[in-house]
Image (cartoon, rainbow, N blue to C red; front, top):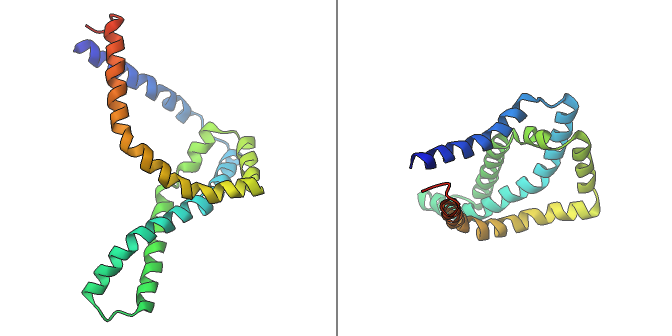
Length: 169
């Protein structure tokens, strides 16, 4: 069991060391500008649409609760409240993902990010940006429920391999 613990510690260290090494290299202002520009372009299309989809799903329940609280609330008031809910949610989402451009800058060059921004400005790139919010929820709906079993099966298979090779008793 001690060897398994040591192996786990070694694997975690192997995963963390590259991240620590990347953290030491600060991207240039030019690279960060390209990263922010690319992210803004992607956020404007993908995240705004995904936020609207989430509001579309969440709002009916909220509207029922608001109506139950005050049945004579006007449709105009409800529409205004929905807009405010969407605005607040988008502002929070924007805050949550504010550090994403720095991640782009760690993995992509300034030229890469400018090329991607140029691609997303083409008709094909724009089509991809329009399609992304539509297929991401479907993709997550398929993948996320399977992640835990995949992790369990991977660990089980890897431990079996380690035992077969004599690395573990």
